[in-house]
Amino acid sequence: MPEYNYDGFATDDYDFENIVGPMVGEKAPDFTLTTSDGTTLSLLEFEGEFLVLEMGSITCPLFQSRRPVMEAVAHDIDGVSSAVLYVREAHPGADIPSHKSFDDKMACAARLKAADGETRRVYVDGFEGRAHQAYGSMPNAVFIINKNGCVVFRSEWNNPTATRKALLALKAGNTVRAKSYFRPAMPNVALKTLRRAGKGSAADFFKGLPKLIWTNVIKRNLRLLLTGHVSGSRDTTC
Image: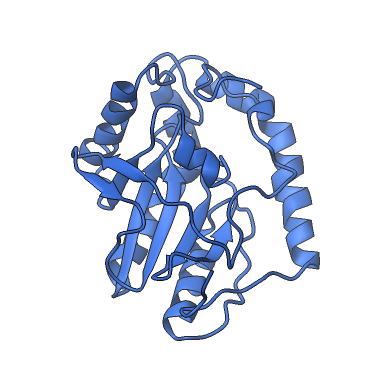
């Protein structure tokens, strides 16, 4: 197995074939985490009816592409908490390398808030990524968790349109019908993110791009199209 905080991205660092982490109807793992401002909080002690938890890092093109819409979801829908779990760097490079300590990770999370203007609460996972691994280890997964601490919607790759539809359905007391198809990052945001990470980031990304397209754009989306999914609700217990 490769190191959790890898120095260069490779497709072997991820399991794109299997769904890992808590499923809909299962208990969401709870962790006591440090936020980007240094506060210590329990992940599942949130206000509102639901927590929308998105995995992300500043070197993840998908996360950076989704941020404007996800921040709008956080502000536009009442009674919902929305947060980022800051995980390992998805595409480290010479300028934003992999984390060598927890302080490195805290610095990147603080940079996400200060330089990128992230407005949601940012939880910083531990150096070894225990929370990230408990939630499946994907770079831009998203989970919706109800007040009972149960997962009521999840996607290995965040599709903000589907996440928003799922959240509105849950708020209305309806069954979730949204399917979260994989959508690539916006090209301009992807290139900007990789350039910012520095030398090595783009090369590693484009080396793995054919497999990323095959396993996610084609295989995953086709599998999702042909299969049903389990829906959670506001009142799901686990």
